[in-house]
Length: 176
Image (cartoon, rainbow, N blue to C red; front, side):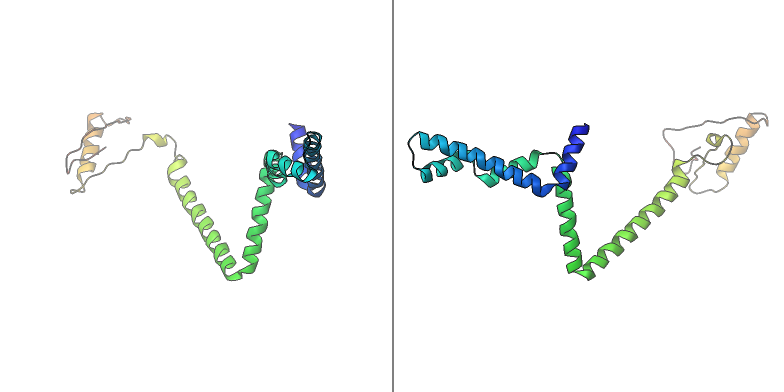
């Protein structure tokens, strides 16, 4: 793993040297193929043309090597960031519009998450917060209170934990 990190850093920081080494290696490879073709009896020009055709071209080989070496994805990210910076410097009105829009969206996202976190994700700041229940009633406003009173009277006035659920509710009936 350390070798891969070291190789990626070398590829990112010593790019000119790496490119010159790659170029010389590919040239020597193509020259070796040319020498083989000349030994077979072809002219040097024809041997070079066939060697480049067989290898797929020097630039294609270089790009294939660049794509698989360590740090290539990071290099692409840096290229994209440099390009984006150049474009934003070229169009300052667009740049400020993007910056202000991002700032507003990040602020709105933070505000919404803070509310959701405080109201839904964190438990209520009460002891035995799970013992609370909610009653919904459409229509009459006192019905849920009378149901609650009846439940307390049924328990004999003692504190009781109540758990009532209904799979189906009728219109106007409370859901506890």
